[in-house]
Length: 184
Ligand SMILES: Cc1cc2nc3c(=O)[nH]c(=O)nc-3n(C[C@H](O)[C@H](O)[C@H](O)COP(=O)(O)O)c2cc1C
Image (cartoon, rainbow, N blue to C red):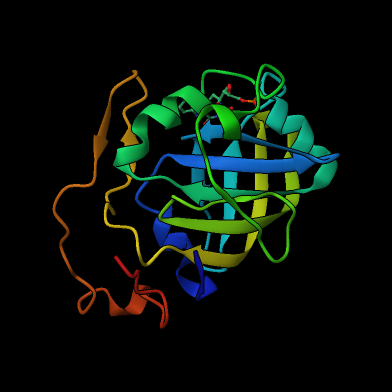
């Protein structure tokens, strides 16, 4: 992956793409699937909803960081597998053949085959609602990725991929900050 402009990091999540959240603690990497997340502003601040039923949650509270990676539809079987097994049961990077790339700011790895990845620092934990609020600080993008359709979850075990794209940038100019145009 190559570094991208942090001003367009939020565009990879705003559409509700299913994400892979990587973590690192005590020499060990882990990854979980996450579809409950929300972009909160353009910086971007990103909230994800999770809890103590996931090992990644405890790791994030300890290390105060993660990397939010955006998989594409060709990775859907891995995405489901990652979200149905715990890191203590196996090395998910080995089991699902995920190639890693080192980030620059956090220790949590970038999944190289994803479309994009956002290195994030934890800013807040809203315990009552299981919300972890991050600031995204470094964007990585994969310009060589042929499949660019991201995955969307209905929440009932069914999924769909991106469909047609419609460009309303001109009429939305007041809400489209400079530098935020997504590559794909
Ligand atoms: C499609 C999908 C979406 C998921 N979304 C979330 C989510 O938004 N929040 C959450 O806490 N768990 C979510 N999960 C469940 C975790 O990914 C799962 O519990 C995972 O095994 C946790 O791994 P860990 O224990 O190694 O951290 C999702 C799973 C799948 C398959």
